[in-house]
Length: 100
Image 1 (cartoon, rainbow, N blue to C red):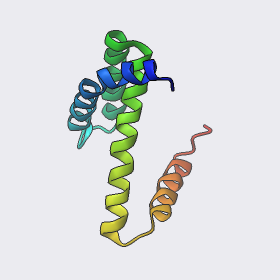
Image 2 (image 1 turned 120 degrees about the vertical axis):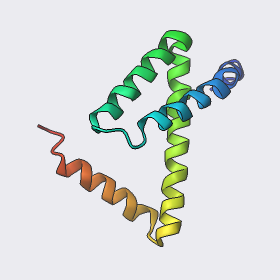
Image 3 (image 1 turned 180 degrees about the vertical axis):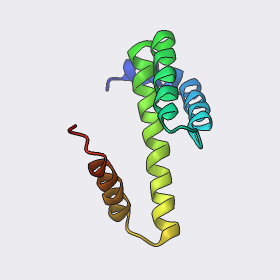
């Protein structure tokens, strides 16, 4: 990433971070669970319309940082290795039969 790109992304990062927190507030505890994907897609569409590809890149960065941080907190609180938690996530995905 060059300096110009870094500055461009940094300029929109605070607003995109706020939007990612709003998305998590809407998605957490959502029922039925299919609404989570709908909320995420609506947020991504809104970010893309307003900020373009740069906005989507910052959104995924923000959400990944939140997810990684929470996984680390969960691992520490549960006394489980981080890899064990990630293996559980992968197992859940595999049980959902993604190839079908």
